[in-house]
Image 1: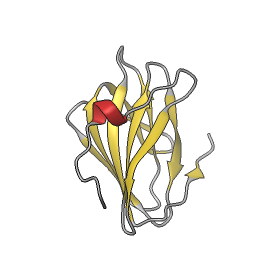
Image 2: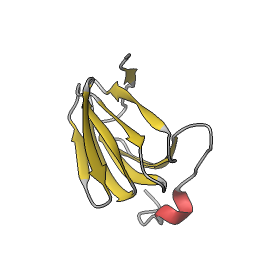
Image 3: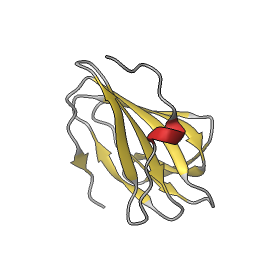
Image 4: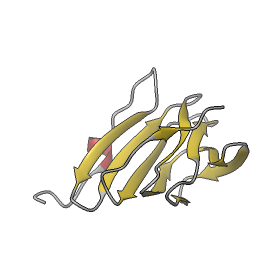
Length: 116
């Protein structure tokens, strides 16, 4: 891996129509992404059947979905863990963008949406 230092301000991308994921590195074992969720946007509830997903919250506040029908508040400075097979997703209820780093392992990961 050539680049081993990443500046999230340079990596992150934001789109008005949906929560935005930008992959900034990938290896044969893990993958790292930065997510931006604007106020009012939702990252759909989903699961990964073979991978853990760890979120490090750099900015913002919101609601985390650790289960299909459960809501837990979260904020900047927290780390959120979704072990393989566990529901996770988020909604921005604040006034600023939520920005978090997601580290997933092992890869490749699958994405299975959880319907309401």
